[in-house]
Amino acid sequence: MARICPISGKRPARGSIIWRSGKAKKKGGIGTHITAITKRWFRPNLQRVKVQLPNGEVKHIRVAASVIKKGLVNKAPRRNWKKKGEAVEA
Image (spheres, rainbow, N blue to C red):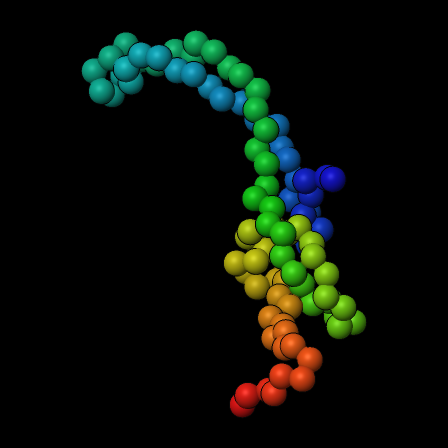
């Protein structure tokens, strides 16, 4: 399964961790120096959400947390399951 958000298009991006040692010049040192660079991945924060599609179908999809916060997905309403023969209380 691809780690791609179908709505925002967010996907994993390559980056690096830069290790620095030393004290900054403005803090009284002789300056910082890079001692190592290691590759890493920045992955989107995908969440599995039950969504109601425009045609009324309810489906689980994996979307980025930022999409949920922005309100770009229409979350499906919660279902109230009742046993057969049980009266519905109002």
